Image 1 (cartoon, helix red, strand yellow):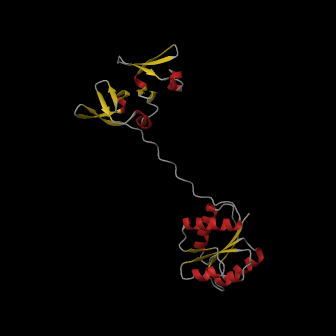
Image 2 (cartoon, rainbow, N blue to C red):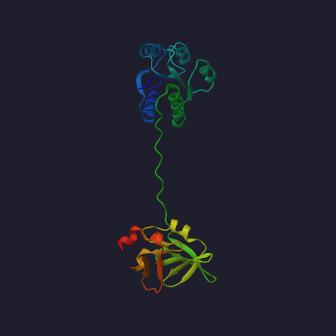
Image 3 (cartoon, rainbow, N blue to C red):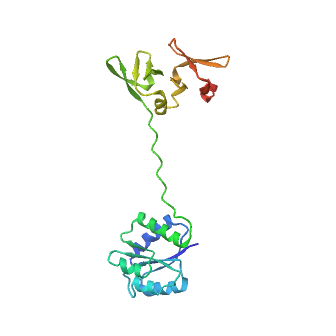
Length: 243
């Protein structure tokens, strides 16, 4: 297990860093917390932690002074509210340099750098937010002659490829859209629609019956005279076994 010391003379900042490390690097064990240079140096000599997070400006001895006499195997990360100490920090072999106030994204980079140096496990990255729920198509604009109609998907009985267009059939109208069936099916709610061939999609609620004969399958629709064939590749769908 990787061990660490936190040296910070401001209690709130010390507690914030400790909490952030617990969340981002749960395998790390904090073995000491100190508030001045003399106590920090004594703890380093006694415990020889793998990592020391050192505030540069501490009473009794600065973080830079402590780093110069630390145990050789202890990696150092400096903490400061000012950027002018960066060159001095790297002159004493600092692994990284964090400017206050604490930035967790920057701290995560530091943890990764330390783990590469120490050969430890990867840092625990914050969990990714869940993807937003998928939005299914609820209405379409379709052409009926020179008129553009707005049709809700609930009204549609079936979609069928027709030359360069897709025909949209409802109880009242037959209209045309330019979207091909293969793209359309990806946008429709699968609970409401089922593709029965490369060129046809049917509203499940409008299916009256499915007839099977000699290895062929046909869909009969409520209130319509059309009979739509189910292609062989689409006959194995669970939906047809349930009908």
